[in-house]
Image (cartoon, one colour):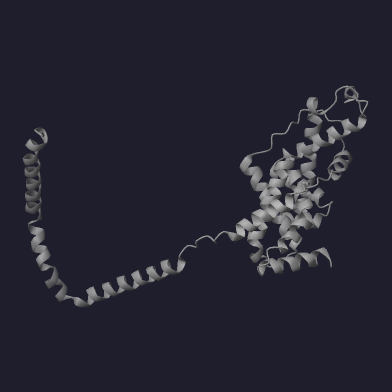
Length: 112
Length: 191
């Protein structure tokens, strides 16, 4: 097959006539699409506003903490005392929960 | 009124909210888009379905049409991208390229039928070329060998399109030879 053969074949294509109801079908789908509500957009404004507010709050908090100095130390002192007894508090909580579980066993085992 | 002016007027009306104006666009372009789709799939029902998809995409994007290019170029570009995407998504169409099935092995008294079958096999073989060559060949011949317009629609420079056309036709010619396709009127024994 020569290049000329190919060229002649590819140049000569029979024309296809669209179906008689093609236009009607397209227009029906177009009208359907036009009647649909537009899709919800991503709330960029709210996201950006929220991010900006968070940044401002974080910056303000950092500035306040830096400025508070000795007052901050006085504020967190009780927390430091609490941290010293944290393991004991943990053991006590665990013991309480285990006791409650054991106490509920007879009710579970001997349910009428 | 020229066709381009009619398109521009209808586009303006649709953008302004007059849906019925879109019908004019569909009527003017349906034949061209269905025929273009046909070249990409060689199946009538699929071609109409793909053309319908193009019209819907066009309708959705009309508001963003910036008039930087002709409406025709913009529309055909949407069509090319849609048809390409469909072929990528659905895979190459399952078309028979078997010369035994498409061609009369014995000399056919109805030479016209044999010639038509041969031509159809070549057109189907185009669809099995790598995408860049397939698109180059399809759009070049669809645009009636207007290299500039085909390049604009495909979004490549003319030199690139020329190179793809050359390589695509060479590949097609070799594949046709491997399939046993021969020029019209040459009996099988001579090839």
